[in-house]
Length: 585
Ligand code: ARG
Image 1 (cartoon, rainbow, N blue to C red):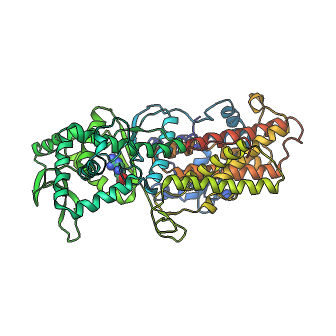
Image 2: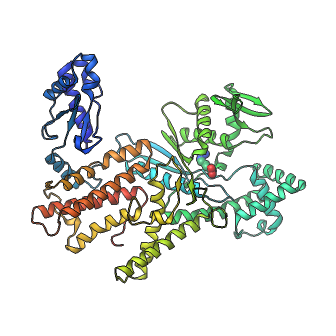
C-alpha cells in the first residue's frame, strides 16, 4: 500500500509546479503528520517557507497551492490556518477504502522491500567462560527484533553471534583446566565443569599469583594457536559448556542465531595486519602496530591510535572485527551490517569502521551501523545486582519473571473466580513473563538506561506487554462471545467509519506500514511499541463507545472487521518484537 503521506506529498509537488513553475515540481512540500489533532491529520508550512522567494504573503501562496491541489476523495477541502499553514483532514471514505484493501492483505498493507538486501545483524555475542550478562540480554532482545523486522520486509538476514571464544585468556583457562581436571584430555564425554565463571575466577587467581603458571598459560596460547590437539580439546570443552548455558537462554526467548565466534576469523588476522602495512597505514607505537585515527584524541589531546597487533605479537578485538567486516563483505556479500552492543563500545566501532574505510575493506556502498543501547539498572537506579550484591544470572532473571507473572495470574484468577488447568496457567505465566521482559526492554528508547522492575513490566496497565496481550485477548473474546470466526468474516465486507473513535482507530491501523519502514531504517524498536500501545488504546476507546455484537448490520460486520484488523495488527506487531500472543489469559 502506498503511504498516505507519500500520496499527499506527490499531489503537493504537482500543485506547486502547476502554480509556480517547473522548478517547483521537485521541491520538498514539507508535509508532516499534524502535531495536534485539532489541525487535522497532516500539515504543510511550505507557504511560509516560500514567502520570501516568491515575494508574496504566505496566505496568498497557500491559496494558490490549494487552487491547484487535487486531493478530492482523499482529504476534506484543505484549510488555511494562522499565518499560512495548510491543514489537511482525511476523508473517512478514503480511510474506508484503504482499510478494505489491507483487510484483504495478510501483510496488512506492509509491502516487501523492492530491493531486498543481504543484511547481517551481529547481536547477543556473549563471551565464553564469562557470565552472559544483562547487556547481552539487551543485545539479544533488540538484535532479534531488528532481525525480525528486516526479515519481515523480505531482506536476506544473517543473524550472527560473534561469540568471544578466542584470545589470550584461553591460555590461562586451558592451563588451569589441565591442572584441575587432567581427565578432560582422556575422556571423550563432555564433563560438567560446573560454574565456568568460578573456574575463570580461580584461573585468574592462579595466573596473578604464580609465575610458573603464567608461563604455562602463555605456552598454552601458543599451542592453541598452533592447533595442538590437547589444547584444542580443552578449548572445545570450555566452548561447549558455555554454549549449552547460552542455548538455554536462547531457547527460552525463542532466539535464532548462527554462531560465528571470534575464533572463526583467526586464520585471517595476520593478513589484515599485512594488508594495512602494505597500504602504509601501520605505525609502531610502544612496540604495538597501530593505525592512527582522524578525529580521535586521548585525554591529553594526543592523536589516538587503534592497536591491531600488540607488542607481544597477539591480535585483539579490533583486529578480529576488521577481519570480520572484510569477510562479511567479500564472502557473505553483506550490503548492510548492523552491530548491536552497549553504548560503551561506540568508540570501538567508529574507530574500526574508519580503519576499514581507509584500508578499502569497507566500500561506500555498504552501510555499517552500530546500534548502541544504555544500561540496565536496578530499582535503586544503580547497575543491576542481586540482593547480595552479585551479578544477576540471566537464567534466574528470566525464571523469576515467570514466577512473578504466575503469582499475578493466580491472584487474578482468584479475583475472577476462575479455575484453569495447570497447562493453561504455566503457559500463560511463561508467555506473559518473558514477553514482559522483552517488551520492557524494547519499549524504551534503546539509547537510555532503563530500570528493571518486575512490578512495572508485569503491570496490566500502561505501556507493557500484559496490557498489549490483554487487548489482543479481548478481541478474541468478542469473537468467542459472538460465536464469530474472524477468519470467515466476509473479506469484502463494507467498512463504515461513522463514529470519531472508529475513525481514529482506522487512522492508526493504517500507519503500520509507515512505522515498520521507519524501524527498518532507523532501528528504534520502541517506535513500534509506542505504535502498538496507541493502537490498543484507540481500540479500547472505540470498544467503550461503539457496541459491536449488539449493533445492527451493516455496522456490526464493519465493527467486527475493525476488531479483527486490530487483533491482526497487534499480533503481527508483537511477533516482530519476538512476542507471541495468547487467545485467552
Ligand atoms: N563479545 C562482545 C562483548 O561481550 C560483543 C561483540 C559484538 N560484536 C562485534 N562484532 N564486536 O562485549
